[in-house]
Every structure is written in structure tokens, then in C-alpha cells.
Image 1 (tube, helix red, strand yellow):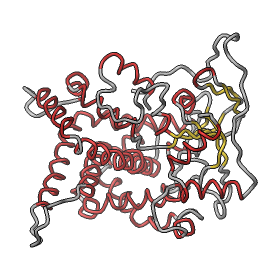
Image 2 (cartoon, rainbow, N blue to C red; image 1 turned 180 degrees about the vertical axis):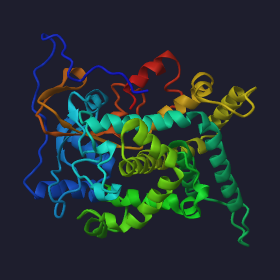
Image 3 (cartoon, helix red, strand yellow; image 1 turned 90 degrees about the horizontal axis):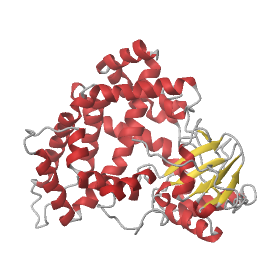
Image 4 (cartoon, rainbow, N blue to C red; image 1 turned 120 degrees about the vertical axis):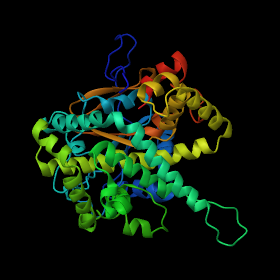
Length: 431
């Protein structure tokens, strides 16, 4: 469910609403300003520190800055943005009357349709484009059609993952070291297998190559698109020279991409036919949109989020015991099967824990939108800022979701935060 919110442009009484003020901050001189901010973002500061320090320096949760990628070989990319790091102003990024989402998924830089089989997929379309509603409705319909099997399919995928981890624990390397195993690769394979069934309606086990390497193909496909915008920890200045100075070419992943394309074409034929018959979407565009939702929205998001969740719960024995007890109580009399109603009604701590992890570690840290028109962006305490049409807004979600004006003990992980009536009210601020 999308959160409800009061529009950030809603006007208070004239007597208590101060006039809008200029947005603080500067982009600096051409070339040098963006380059300075890029080096801070990737090299001299962490992403979190980059936004925190600028908010502190300007004494404002709304300010101007440059966002990578920038100079020298990103032709046509304008790095200038209006940064937002508070929960009140952040809501503007989800108001389609205020912002245009056209070709701005990961910021002013657009990796291009070469990564999506030549199709301009749904997430790069603005809400006012006719094709946006058609593609979005198709994707949601696919999810609704398969929802009844999610529980069984996910448990089967998790079972295979745990078997793989157990097998790794059982290996004897002849040393006296304590047995250990990594769950990250089995977890990614689990996510991939489940999502193929849940969204595409295709079982990866029907294709050996896809079953064993499909998730790796998606990892590479994702990396080539987003690495120019990400800090990865290589030795500097190599990272700046090799990763952040030019767009990475899409042809490197074409062979792998078309392995997945043909898999959906063959084993997801029912969903492809449904796209054409019910939504008027041709086969090529249907498959490319399905691959993007599968690989970027779903697999990419869960691959970032679930390891944080598993590690957090795994490192909290008392919380783990409470969660286990709650789930076991909820499962009584259900013969091992459950659905959304069970989680919603009988597992409040499970839900609150997941919400709190989403607050602390949002899988997509940056949200972007381009102002459709001039408007006044409102923040806490009556603060108001004049935004001009065409300016790019950049919301840094990890800080917006730790806004002390909204959340008590904002830097702490509090699994009970969203329990009860007060917790339910807080959900309107959680994105």
C-alpha cells in the first residue's frame, strides 16, 4: 500500500506561512564544481557523509549540489540537482502533479535502451505517457495472477537455499577451523528462482543455463547500468578512471540478456500472450518490460535488502526468538500454508521488523523527479523553497527516513517501531 501524505505544496494560513526562500547551496564553476562534488561523493566521503555534511553546512534539509556521474565523458548529463533529506519535502518526489519521471530512474544519467533490448521500459516513462499505465497495469496483473502460489513457491526456493547452505557447512576441509558457509549466492539463486515463477510464470529448472547462471547474468546486467553512479571500493584513482568517467557499454551483456529473453519467450509464453491479448503490448516490448521488472525492480531490490534483513535478525538472538515464536503461533492449524492475511493479522512483529529494516536500509537510496512547473516545496517548521520548472529533485532516502522530526531515536533499529496505533500512523511517513 502506498503511504498517504499531505501535499508538500499545501498552503497553511497566510499569517503563519513564511514566504519561500532561495534554495541554499551552489553548483560551483562549470567542470570544476561537478568534479569536486564527484570526488567527494566517491572518494573523499561516503554517500551518507556527502549529504549529511552539505545539509549541516547549509543548515537546511533542502540544498543545491551536483550528483555523479559527471565530467568528462557523460555527454548531455546535467549533474545539478536540488537535494532533499527530510521526510516532509521528500513526499514531493511521489506527487505526479509536481514531478515528471521521464528517463530519470537513477538520476540525470540514463544507461539507455541498449540494456533493455531497444525498448523504453515502463520505469523510464512518465505517468502522463499513455504507455506508462498500460505497462504498469500489465505488471500488476501478472503479480495478482500468481499471488496464490507465492507462499508455496517461496518456501520451496528457501528450502533449496538452506539445503545448499547446509551442504556447505558439512564440507570437511581437514582443518580445525569452525565450519562456515556464505548464504549470499544461495540467497540470490533463491530470489531468482522464486521471482521467475511468481512474475514470469516460468520455472528456471526447465533451462539448466538459466537455472544455474540466470542470477549471475542479472548481477552483471545491473552492474553495467548502475556502476557509474555507485562507489564500489576499488583502489583510487583506479575506480574514478575506470568506472566513473564514462558510460559502460551495453553490448557486453547482450549474449546473457538474450539467454534470459529466449527463456521468457519460450517458458513464459503464456504471460507474453496475455500482454498482447489483454494489454495490447507486443511480444518484444512485453518480454523486455518483464525482464526489467524481474531483474531491476524485483531481483535487484531484494538482492540489496534481504542480506541486510537476514544479517540484522541473525545478529539479534532475542529478536530472532520473538519472531520465531510469533510465526509458529500464527502457523498453528494452517498445515504449513499461509497467505497475506496471516501475515497482516497474526504477525505484527514480523511486519514491523521488515518495515523498520526498510526504513533503515531502503534498497533504492535515491529518488529522482524533474519539476513539471514552478512550485513551492515545503519542509518542516514552515520552511518553504522556490523550485523552478525543469529542476531535478534528488531525495536521499536513508536520511529522509531517519528524520528526527518524525521518528524518535531515528538512528536506532527499533523492530517494534510500527506496532500499535502509533506505529500505524508512522507508516504514512515510510516510503
